[in-house]
Image 1 (cartoon, rainbow, N blue to C red):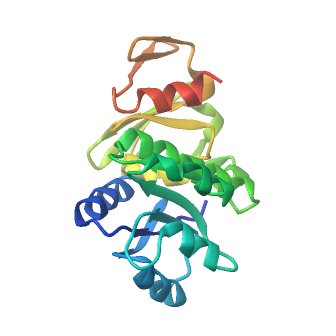
Image 2 (cartoon, rainbow, N blue to C red; image 1 turned 120 degrees about the horizontal axis):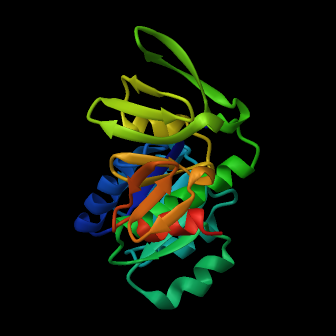
Length: 231
């Protein structure tokens, strides 16, 4: 899937920095700009149209809600705000999600995947349209079928791809792999692990069992992981 281009807009420097850090951790998001208010955002959108806005509601001059209402064809929006009373207005505008400050990475991660699935469902070209990828391993390019992947373990600039019948060590990162894997088929369980959802046989606490393997689940990602696996 092509990366989802996005812009962060918030009048609080601390909030902007926090969201920027979250976006940079997610491989399928491509940050195109950071704005302090709706006026800056309006200028930037004229130069740099994007797919998605992470947009604060309560800002000087023009609120996030007023800004979205003023656009004839706005990008998809994830509202970020400290004020819960705006939630209904936000969802009436058909926004993707509504994040209440302070925003945890776990909750942001969930909203990002909601955006990912939305754009994939709109018929954009996704990695799911090609059921495999090629990766360099053992000095040659190996074809890796997504259906054969059990889980992936990251090791700095390398990754161990555990397949049904073998294991491959490839030169890439977990972040780069997330961009290639099809939405809905895999879930990141930990900063160093990705699991194939349909290969999970059982769950015990913060551990997934896949055949004879144990895959850890980070406490920060547990709710997201459980939502993806237990449907």
